[in-house]
Amino acid sequence: MRGEEYGLKEEKMKCIVCNSPDIKKKKVEEEIRIGNDVAFVSIEVLVCDSCGERYYDRRTMKELEDIERNIKEKNIPLEEVGRILRPTGIL
Image (cartoon, rainbow, N blue to C red; front, side, top):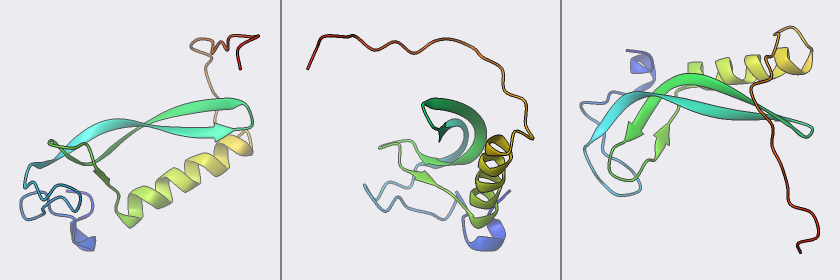
């Protein structure tokens, strides 16, 4: 399992927020913001089933940082998948 070398073992961890032992490896979507744009990146991390707290090991953080850098440098092609709309005239 990714993260074992850094002490992230789902069978031995307890959530630091709610103290639940129900922590499992799950695929989540992280947002990477570039100006007004948002890129969604699927990544596997440990997540508390009780409160949703996420746990990232060093390797995963490095991977996210590398992806963000490559997106900013336009080394990773992005696909437009929708639009974000904001209402006007509302404070």
